[in-house]
Amino acid sequence: MGVQSEGVKKAERFSTGGKAGGVCGIISVVVVMVLSALDPTGDLPLWSYPCAAFAMVAMWAVLLRPGIVLGPDEVELRNILHSRWIPYARITEVKVDIVTTFQTDEGPYVASGFGRSRRKIRRDGRGLVEEQPTNPSLGWLVEQKLLRRIDDAKYATGEVGPIRRAWAWPVIVALSATALVTLVAVVLR
Image (cartoon, rainbow, N blue to C red; front, top):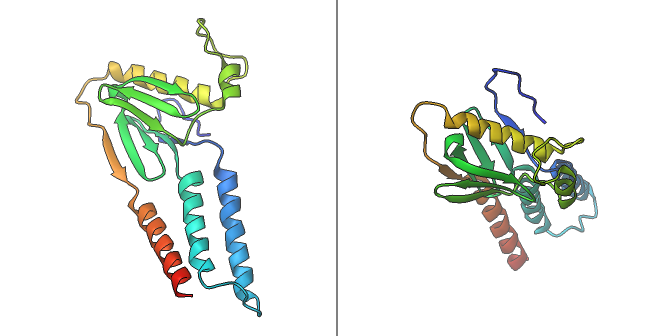
């Protein structure tokens, strides 16, 4: 969790706990593939190598890439295949539930890479009294930080930028290429 010093405009990245699983999964695939490549019997079929590469890219895209990045003027929603940047001044409502939802005049936007479990939502409470829970979750703290930034942006002067989207082309190309090479290797074996 990133902690921002007062007055310092630094981006903070938050994601739901898939990092350990993603890193362990990628390391496991690499270890298995290296050990099998060094095995003198060579029993592993040729198609397993591009398939392992596909699995590693998929683990990275699904478990490590998604999250939200709180910048000085906008929030970045990093999803599996694309990112979206929303200026705080354009956000009318934010909810950190199972996924994080941002409501704007243009419609809702979802950040699948950050959220909190039902248990944490219940523990944080959503009652009529707006007070800090005794042991708030990271999701509650990030939601409060977002609400403060959205509120501050309402009083800021200047032109508000557009909502932007960019495809994660390296991920899309890597997934497509490794899937295609795996398919060709399976067909040609």
